[in-house]
Image (cartoon, rainbow, N blue to C red; front, top):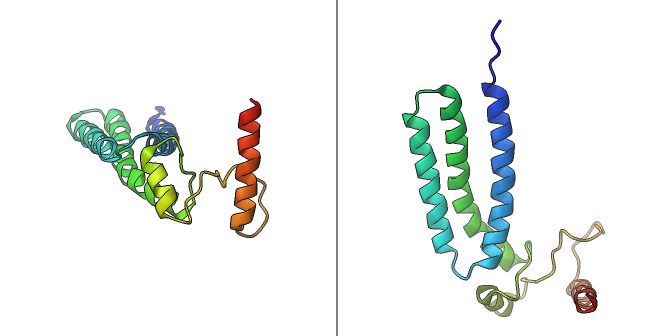
Length: 144
């Protein structure tokens, strides 16, 4: 019996690229003033790795390159969707980013509070509760 590592390699590649993509999408969207160049880079990398997946002879390398390629293409879409999440208040806005400052002024649902960094209460937080969390966060940063 021969050992076939393709399944395990593709599983590991999938987990790592999804994790990397998730972190990259949140950080890039929060920090860059214009998301279009980041989206273009993700599309280019996705097509580059996808082309490599089609052209290599090895099944292992083809699978790994294909997973990386499709993850970058998906991340291009997610960068745009993350911007919508910021507008809805589902992801925190970065007040240091001029694009996010505009979002904070134009969308009442947008907030700089990271709603994932809290104790769950079983219901949506009111604007007053979010404001209280933001004020507490500001005091902690000021004391640091």
